[in-house]
Length: 266
Length: 243
Image (cartoon, rainbow over the protein chains, first blue to last red):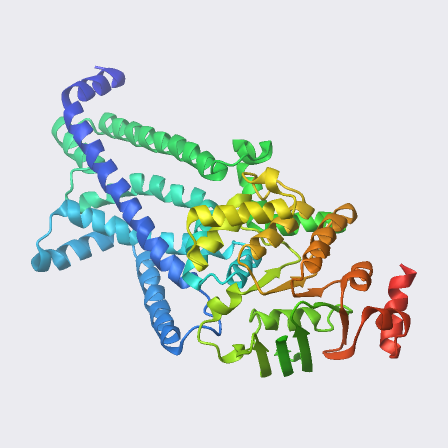
């Protein structure tokens, strides 16, 4: 039998297993990315707060302690492989909280992604025009109100491509979680290959499935990004044109207004 | 009634002393123009009034309140409007929301009340046809007029303008100055840092001229422009006459 016939046969015989595996992969990566995003929003947001002289002494001390812990968290979770984190956390906590490996998988992806997201959100916040923050404060808005109404909406828009990238990375990298025996795509492919001895064909199918999932995710992210950038307001062609998206966002990050004024002065 | 009373404030940025002991008063209903070369400290003085900068020493009383020791800086800032050179509109909101969101969050006004106020002031600055417009898409003059309306929506007792026309195309300067002139005629107390000598001469009640971190002249415009007493003032005015 030829390669393509084998591929077809394996798909016919094992499609229910593969479908279930897909479901698990999508479940842990989507849920993990979403939780990671929330963790990143919280930590990145708090890390980016600049306390001015109006802040109390207590909040200053709390902020310093928080910054130290956040820094440690990011260093540890960005500095060790997710596979190591998965085995270590799963088995270390198994006797204490008796969790399932799926719960552990979602948890590990969440905290791992959270570390990256915190940095993504922080850089998104730092790209927000400082003048707008000053304007918000001059109107009497508190630090928290400024963050919620002005800074975060723009920071998320700035950081959207990087946030979306994390989802795509997680769809692929959830494959390392087979180390704690969750039946996602990689684990499933290994067991099918183990029974059929058709390694090339099975891993070919697996690669195709990953490629399909990530491509669909990329398409969806592009669509959402357009919506986020438009945010219901009319924009010029250059801002909505996908080919120009990156360029126009960089201009935005550097402070659209300032750009505009520089031109007027010259 | 004295609205702003500043005594002997000093401000230093690193090794650069920007304010070297400034005394400055503003009466209610007065329009004061702060003039001076770049780097003379006029913007810093203005930014000290609403605490965007905190002076290193000295005293600032606004509305009779010692604002350097105030408990609630945000409540104080809400009473003082500010317009910036770079407009600083919130680019994640349309024109209307720029004006309503601060009212709703800071003054806890209802949405309907905030919108009514916003419509009133946007009408006043001639931007009533741009309620839903993206603030990134309108012209500089339009941006500044929206920024003025946004500040007015908070019902400030005092308005600060930090070079409101310096970033504008020449043909847009007029529309912004006309709005400001209208506000002055309505009796709003205003402190304006500007390089527009025509505006200073025709609209201001008083000119305060700063040089090198101190106030050099403090007099009515007629006196300032026609009989300047100090050499630095004459030099400054000569520079503007030449251009």
